[in-house]
Image 1: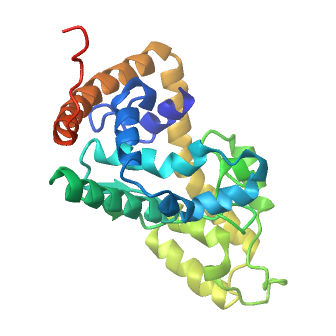
Image 2 (image 1 turned 180 degrees about the vertical axis):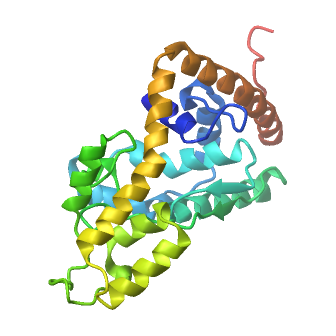
Image 3 (image 1 turned 90 degrees about the vertical axis):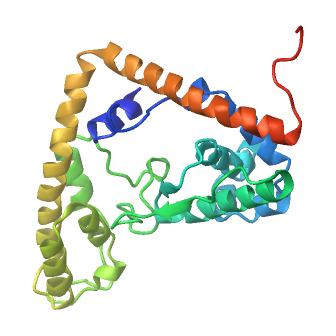
Length: 272
């Protein structure tokens, strides 16, 4: 519920999109199983994220992890999405969804469009450790609900360009995780200023982080305020998710009726 509340607070309001809990629309799972039947195991084993997470969690490599890209494909294709907003690390999964659409269409007839990737100005934000993408599971993330003092401390201790040992050393923003955060939170003129003055040692890392903190709070502060406001009425989010699921289920049911017809499966025949 917290994640859904934050999404609405960020602007994904019911009048602009349909927000729902995936398990409340079981057609997702059904389409996943159908897609499994046209997906070679070798393609899943070659997925970058599966290999990376397999190394991180060697004792918990399960079928769910292997099959997750197929579920993602079902999430996308069941609504015949044209564009999918993702981070840079998810491009491969969208491409995989396109491949599944092609395989299904070739075998059963034109059914699904091939979705396109939609990237933001900051498609990949590095974590505070500077070594990998920002992720809660890697303990290198700044949370949207973190108090200001926590965010400030995380930025203070965040890794920057390792080659910049002294204030007078020129830096390289392309190697700095703080700069990737600026690309998400700072104005274009500020980004250009920081890029130039970092490379020429005209600005230090402390000042750079102070600018980022100020810009972050200008964005995050109002979001946290809206979350607090919605938390005063918990039923609101229950109603939002219930309505979103009903609207999406109607779409998903129509698509699944088409899919079942094309593959030769009839739903709901038992006992009739």
